[in-house]
Length: 121
Image (cartoon, rainbow, N blue to C red; front, side):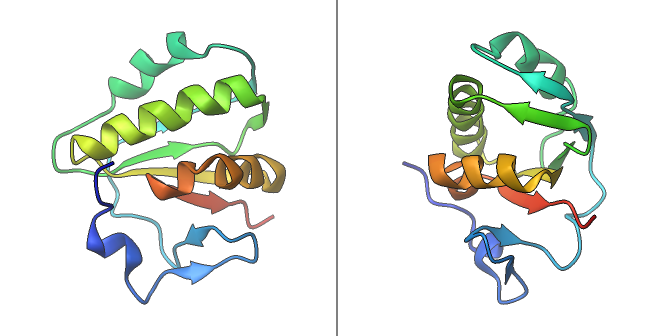
């Protein structure tokens, strides 16, 4: 497994009470993709739309404000994709996640490969 960049463990990272790293400020304004609605089963078909926003050397922020829920299988697909992107040196941030989705992401270990940031409201 590839090591997470040291900058992701910077002292400015704050625990949000869910065991997930969160940022006091979002990652630098890089490309923004989004996930919304309910994601179930094999969500591999969604990955090309996320990958279209990838830019070498720029973090990808994935806006999840309108993501209602995701099941275990879909979260597993996102875990594998996040690990693959990290291995390529790409930083990811799943931003504005519902607390329950963030908990699932953390239980599965997505937070080991990408930032998992909970909604403030």
